[in-house]
Image (cartoon, rainbow, N blue to C red):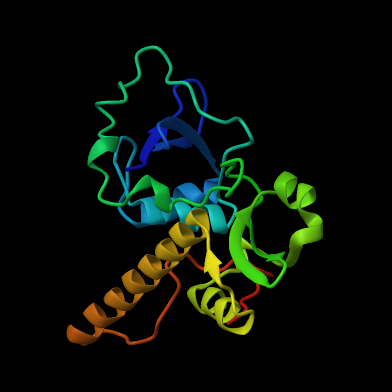
Length: 207
């Protein structure tokens, strides 16, 4: 599971998580820190992987293209970070289908003759495969409904492993929010459905 850490030599917080055997460092905006604090997460706490994904969608968590992070001397070891016991598989976190990058991902439709397939491509891989790409949607605008409509309307024959894992993450996030709504209804609280993290000003929804 991702772990929230506080910087030792400056004000601020960052997140360490394991993805495909690498420890990845995510920087946080001040708003991202507030959002994690609002969930009850404190420095040193583990938190749900899909929360980190939500922060990435709003731009409140980012890698700065630094790749795997280095644990500083005196930091907890990887074993102590307890990534192995994460109930949410690390493969659910979106990665490029080709190069495994985390950066600037789009859900794309690939045309190969009569075959139509779906994948997740970073900017570089989209450029390399531009002639085969028909539809291309930034992942921050992809909801469970948008993904399902793309499959239906474009008659995709298949989606690759990266896109499939991304869909599982969207399904899980959707289920989490509906479970929260049901819990509120059971206890007689407000039935108004709200996003886990409020949308930033100017951020649009497709569905």
